[in-house]
Image (cartoon, rainbow, N blue to C red; front, side, top):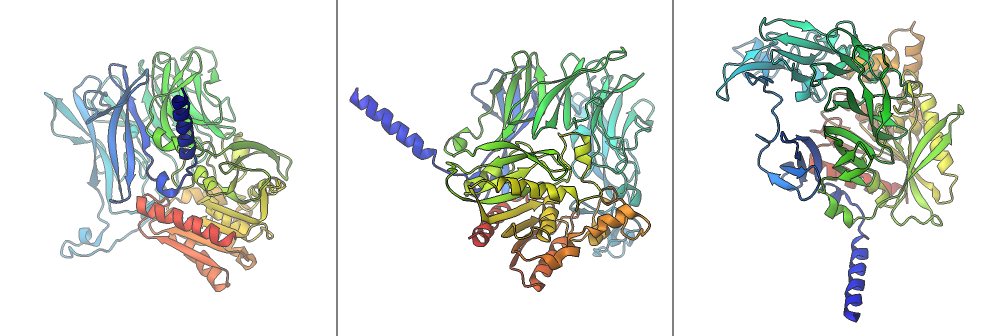
Length: 637
């Protein structure tokens, strides 16, 4: 008996010791990234992929698994063939879809002049000469359809011949951009049939239907001038997709629209606070499950599809809690399979019981790693802004937080600007990692974030230097009233719009912060307008070009550029810039660093020549993390 208690005590000590580990950049980049691929054809398994970064090779390895819908031990598999339905094969099994890059235009010198094969020149006559991280070379992704005979594909036909348009859409489109009609005779695909400058200033993406029998194509959404994306049919042949109304506004309210071939209905227009991020049809085709931000989290909702009846769609919230549920894989009976994260846990697949509302974890890819790590408490706070609105602020505390002590504190500024700040798990801007280094994190759901109503979301556009900056200061000022915040060790950090926010606050913080970090932030509005790829974004957010002197809105916007207030900078600043970031091009970071250096301000530049708006290679990501925390340690002494 004594030995038994001794063994138990030793086990408890061992477990307690294991639980003392804190998350580090190296541990973070050993985590597996889980992606749900689908539900098996026999409805017994969930199939998923796990991508794991490999520091040695500077790449990621990928493995495939399946796990029973009831849970249990996962099994590694070598292929999904035969296990998952192939969505590229037509429902009648007679044809198969594929995509291939096709040379449409001669843009490179070696293409235009065959006697100069070693020329690396580019010749452009319009905008969209580069996009995201790639220069336009005259090649476009097209869809091909081929007959299937005895399981083998015959000669493939380009259904977009000669078109200077892409499907899948660049830079982020995938297989979801082209689908079969259930009749197997028509293909619906997403593209923006604009080219050059017209492409760069518009978001007018449409759904097109190609008829295999006639070889003709028709536009299914000609009336809508904004985004039409993510088409999906139910088992009754009714087509749903995501739609934004206004051309040029990439962050417009996104709704689910359904057409039965006779009439079209917007299912989510009734809810002003809902911006749909993705959806799946229910098994019986009478409803759709979707995920959307709501009060600082991502949750699953259900909306009924009433068809031709006069009944209104009914929206109900399926999940609720301080976690994110997104990326719906599919439904089997009363089980809905989706992805779950929170600020302490990376994505794992879960099963949601639609009858009871309970959630069961199906995958356990990172359980072993997470079990030895201390978690960080996350807390909701509602703060009154300067215009008397209530703003949600997430506060994240270090492991073993002691309120009697003082902690250095970081104001985290979210990107977007219209991007939700929820219980997500990032592999760069990771709140658990930040807090595990001993920092309190203040993360406000400031103006411009979906999940708090359309008006709240839209109050950032055309006024980047206005209320949104006051929201940041309201958040840090309110939390700084707590005795555990060391007011002499506060920093402001962020990327993209968050990087802009750091640049802007650096010129108006009135000694609140001792350090700044800005990653791929917008420093100078004029040069940004002159070099960024998607001009529709700048036109909407700034209200027009800087040279339009009669446009009061645009003139006010450009007057708010951080470069106009660099004379007020007086605080150390760390600037990070990707060399292949064409969304926020390289001159933004270089100008900011040069200005700081010439003004004698302690500053550092981390230049990542082969990274775009993100940091994707494992070794660069570790460099990013190490430099990030070294800078904070150095400047928040």
